[in-house]
Image (tube, rainbow over all chains, first blue to last red; front, side):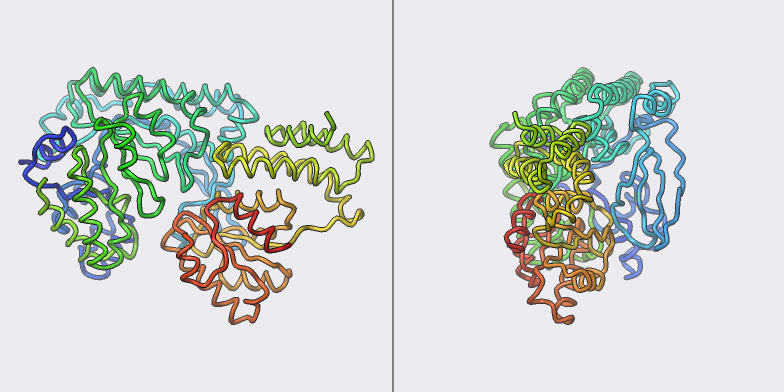
Length: 373
Length: 210
């Protein structure tokens, strides 16, 4: 069997010869660590490892992974063009205030590896939306590389699953206005404007997906990114989320179904439980990456609640890969139990972080491939 | 409806401009500053905090309520000293060294202020020495450390060690929180209090100070 067949079969409750060893990429700092330890060539650390890239594939071979689930392709589904990334100010302590491609102003301290602090944002009112953002949110033919997608079925990797990236209904907007800006706009200043932003952006991403599918390109799954939850659940009320977003999930998922794509995954960090009904009822059927280690998210309760239609990729506590063999063995056993439920592919529950032990990752990849279900 | 109830209710709805206007009206009516603060602003934030703990409201409602409270307290601050209104206690707070993500820290800060505590906000990427030195210099009863990353949470242990070395460990309570942090981790590093959400952190801080 190819890994593509294994993945498709597992998510359709069909037999497989063994589990595939699946991952979700790395922090770049981990690759630097591994290169310094002589585990991987320096050029792989320096070149980075974008999901699905040739570097990613080479790391798969070195480590023993079968594939990265986050291997997806799409048209240009973001702001086009993005804002110019520029340093606006350097503070006394060296901290930089940087305008990002999404128009958010972040505080970045050189040498500090961290998710940045959100300091300010451009998208504050209707004028900013109409003048700065709306033109960047329109569908244009140049968003789609037609030649690439027309040849996609022949040129794509044949032995691993590849997904169509459907974009993000709310996560990208949050990245443009920050959590603070989203809160102010949505709950106090201009709820109607916020809904307009969501609708405008969603329409562009829908048209991008439609244009790609119309080329005849075939995909094994489709995929959303959101990251709209944290340790204690969603970043906003599930009812408000449903009101703003449900119709857009449904529209894009219905489109995928018309083109024969029946596995639609969604990447959301944090505890996702309260948003699952909106996703599941509107066509998203695969949880990813199910962060058990840091946030305590879980797959089993979702399976119990939604039944066998709820699929999962992820759920393996990646922090075990920083500990020891016993911790990894315990996770492998837990993964065996989850995989035996069917419709589930084990995968570390997020990108592997600094301090992850190379030998333990190799061991995990080797052992998970020994599991027959 | 009394004006103080109106302040509380509008604060809960995040109506910053209305809250500011109502607080000014309350001052003009001669209502004591402490009463405006406690029965208007802090009462509203307290209700929001409870609802947040119970998942009845979410992060955005807390953020807009806190903004409304700030609008009100800006008007009250100049009058509070003259009226002899004292804070419930004093806390310094920051994200630990190496960690710039501060949404959680800011939420806790808002909740602490919503309980009437004075907060020294050290910002992000704060070293263990800075936490401890600030606690000494500003006479803080509590140090609050926040971390988003498993790679930075170890700095919390350094804060505990530095506080011990500085001889203030028995005088200062060290509270920790953030995505990767747990009660077990709190015990392991010898910190005092872990809470899983911002509202519970504020409740715990009030208990410490009272």
